[in-house]
Length: 218
Image 1 (cartoon, rainbow, N blue to C red):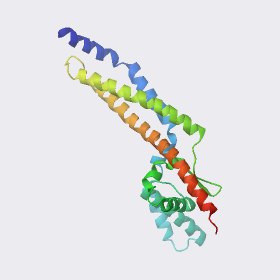
Image 2 (image 1 turned 180 degrees about the vertical axis):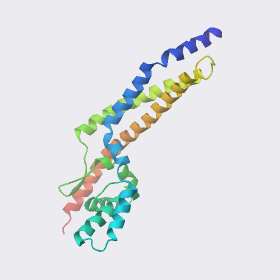
Image 3 (image 1 turned 180 degrees about the horizontal axis):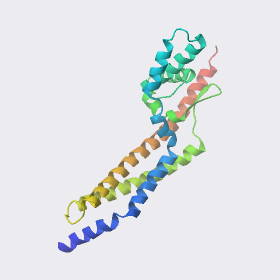
Image 4 (image 1 turned 60 degrees about the vertical axis):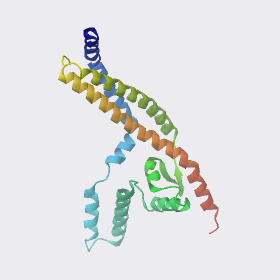
């Protein structure tokens, strides 16, 4: 029993090294670089901007054209607050049309999930999946597998570290932090993978809706 305990003590102390932590940081850095668009969309737009526009609309000498633009900007921000989708006047109406055409088959929650792929091109509502998106999808899948393995590995190390008082508190804390960090990173990657998969499912459906709408006589 003493030999087994000593093995785990040496194993944990050996594997919690600057190299293992650097590997995790490297994985996170790569994931962030390839998902900057999603991260930017998450943190963009603030309550202060909406408050400023509302106050500006109350100013009596603001020109009519300026008020129109302010109202449109406010509607965009409120729509984003309500749905999570950053959409101008045309895109908002296209989204509503798609939901109505689907007769409940497509909900706003599904469109919110794929908001990074929604585009208006030549007046048509489209799901735009580029070759870069396909490449990022492949990289995210690879990183997801690595992150899950990394997380499970360090959770096992943490469990073993808690069994032996000879392992330092700092080493145990780093083990838990690495395991949890890897798990959270895996969750972020899964959201991006899920969004891409959903966009692939909805792409032909949206294309059919647009074709049917354009074929109808005015």
